[in-house]
Amino acid sequence: MTTIDEIRENFELLEDWDDRYRYVIELGRTLEPMPEAEHSASNKVQGCASQVWLSKSLERSDTGGALLKYLGDSDAHIVRGLIAILLTLYSGHTPQQILATDAISIFNEFGFREHLTPQRSNGLRSMVERIRTDAREALAAAS
Image (tube, rainbow, N blue to C red; front, side, top):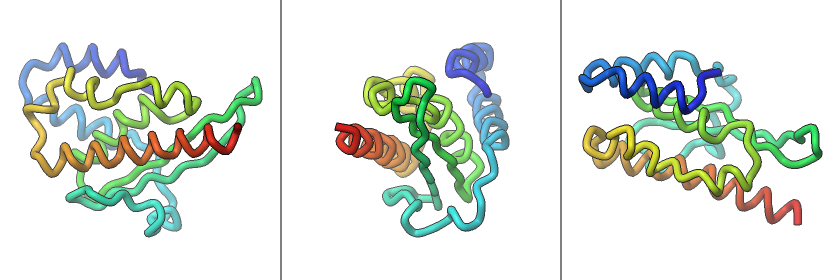
């Protein structure tokens, strides 16, 4: 599994945005396949221009805490890459870690603010908000 630091380093090496887009698409190809049954209405993320699905599972860590694990998919190559970056940030982490991670500022740091269409930016925010809502619900259920 690629870490966010590896993605950050690769982004710094690629100065040209065409190369960066190709890299993001490549990351999307590394997503674990999502079973067809998971492409459901309940997993569909609203507010995205393309079709986007995020399915979550709640697992227990070795210490008994909750971990949120995700599968993601999209019908758009670039969006699959954005999902891959998001899942690198969030999947397999505790609700507290998820809520402490500002994905949008990391995407902005990579330069996506200037290089994503407004619809893609809104879709990205919708995906982040969906995961953060899941984290808040997991915390509420645990208390």
